[in-house]
Length: 375
Image (cartoon, rainbow, N blue to C red; front, side, top):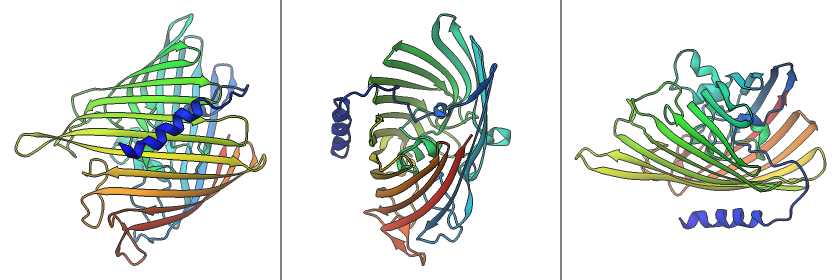
């Protein structure tokens, strides 16, 4: 747990930073950050994120290891493109977001049929006319970690390890309960851990508590509990997960975010006993604005999965752990256009990577560029 202490000190420190008078900070964990043009009760928007990435391990299949976002090597391609259609009335709402690109190919491999192209698709009802209490059902955005699949919303172009190994999407029911202007609570009943079609008979429970102590700071705490046994992992039983993240987003030149989480997975052993394994991570990301169009960003992170709960490392390694450092330059010629360049380096205590001739290695590096348009 000592790996998490720096993150929590950063979070506590940001709570006491001076206030600015501006709109409340947006939670970038979900797709709802996108602005829309509303015509009557219908809102339509779109998004295209194209990229070129070069992985210096030069993977033979052009598929980068351990990632679903920006997952292709030495190709000019689309990470994610989608159309976002919403219906909004006083008591009812609906949303449908079909998606395409290499992110969809890599992240929806366990889904079948037409549902494997749904980023979000739900209908919702306001339970009381004079209270903002909503019940939504369908394919939902995930609250877990401070990063979603939508790169334009984030300080770095690539995704941290943290969101890559928690759900990007959920399927089930979501109850929204505003407690006061600074505090929101959300309750989820789910088919499971990033599944649209249920893979067992059990249902899972999730919670989200979203607190804005000032206009510039958001602190979010999530939990998850569910039975994760499946055909792919018949030994899995109850999974417990909790994350804590902070977003600091003032009108000034500097913004930052930090995230830490731990997941616990019960596994049934051949002798009938139960073993509990864990995976955990911590990261800090910062951005400094040079002028209205140019900013620089950086990230440091650590990720550990000692017993292959989420990641099966290559090279016959039994344990996965990695450190990562990233540096990015971001250019916004217009409010809805994002041109980004990023360099990212990885180091592990174990030989979980490969070099450019296919030999086991402790190191890996990536250079990537992108053009993204939201409309």
